[in-house]
Length: 212
Image (cartoon, rainbow, N blue to C red; front, top):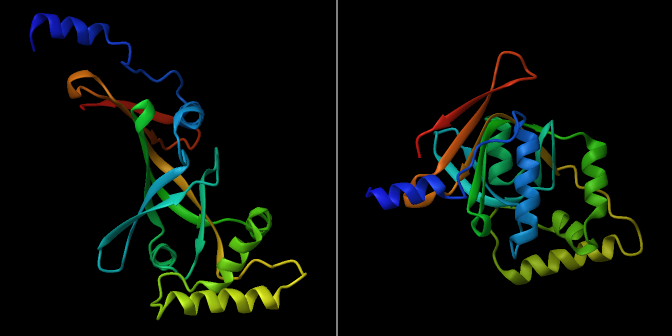
């Protein structure tokens, strides 16, 4: 790197250092920033799971809530991700916010959220989405789109003019993190990376800077 470029890198305003030793507080700050700048779905995240043969799979899901206890998303428990997590609850999620040039990677173990929490969220969903949770046998083969729409219609008729209950096979999963990495884009691909790792004291985190 030439002298001028090195000086520019030192003065680069995007250089990042964590402002807190609480990763949840830092995530809240970044998530709020992303919510103000991302055009679509700042809550979109990649979710990686592993099957019984150690074959990984990844897909995009939506974060629906987050706090000091972890990161919550919802799914059909009989879907591929649902069945994989029932056998191996270890998972990883990743957020990439292109507009603010940041990403967050989170690893930990998942658990099913309480029934009352899942019920409350289910009732907040649009009615057609509630019907869809009953109609879709997620990840299973489907003969045709028409078959799916016919199933949707049958459930619309079944629950016409009544409240739709949450299906027993549908609910929330909470990922409780043991490791959270914050990545901030840097000049010349010299990014800033920090990981927060759970210590033996459940209330504290070890912070380490990583090479880009």
